[in-house]
Image 1: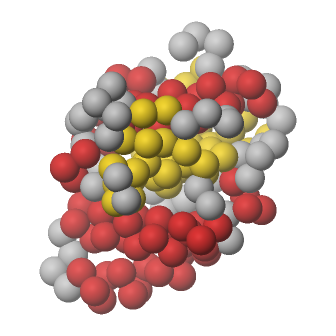
Image 2 (image 1 turned 180 degrees about the vertical axis):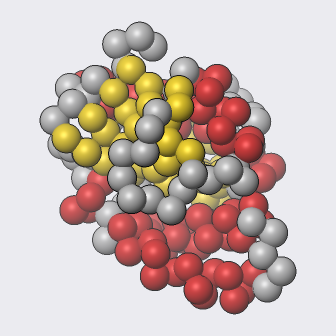
Length: 171
């Protein structure tokens, strides 16, 4: 993961997150989620859910190589997206923290984040990747289905309603 990749036009840079970027990543995730869930009082929504992102604030124990990876996507100096992978067991990783600012959705940035994470997962020896999401995230569900993720039974006690998995050997 030593190289930085850019879009063809050179605008979007995707790379591993640095500790000092964790607060900005948390705020991006909260802001995008507040819009997705149509929170009337965005600031109240963000404050209520801020503590649920402790894994972002202290991402190293959960997402650091050699068993995980937390990526950020930048357009110049602007953080526009995040994506992370963490270990569930020796052969299974979990995809999470995939969030993009709305203007960047559908433009290939999410796909590039996924490709980087999937390549890392294969190099690490994971055979499958799982994820959870909620029923409101229809655009994300469609994106994951296009990548090859398929519905599976619940694998944890998440409040999310959708559980999906992709076999990395098939994709």
